Amino acid sequence: MSEHSEPRGLTDESRAKMTRRLCAVVLMFEGLVVFFGSLVASRMSDDVSSGTALAVGGGLAIACILATGLLRSPSGIPVGWGVQVLVLATGVVVPAMRRPSSSSSRTASAVAWWVRSCPASRPRASRSTR
View (spheres, helix red, strand yellow):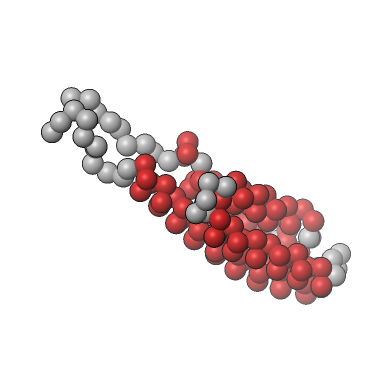
């Protein structure tokens, strides 16, 4: 082996591609969870009108799906972070979304997003010098 050969394992390019794919999966499923959560919130919330809950929830679900498409560009991860913050903020605004089951799904999505999108959370391939 030469001194400058690539180590076995994932290259930076394949690592970035895998990160984008996994972030896309998180956002797509989160879009579904947000949409169905907005249907529940429209029926259960006394503080927010049904139309408002459906409009905000539908808008967030569409934002999740659009952010999935933006993951191809360098601005995709920051847009995904923005969507995560907005989704977590719905738990503060809509009381029906404060239920434990809804809070746990939002928290799980946020954790999965953080693990896949933060460079510091990913293990790096060690490069040995021989």
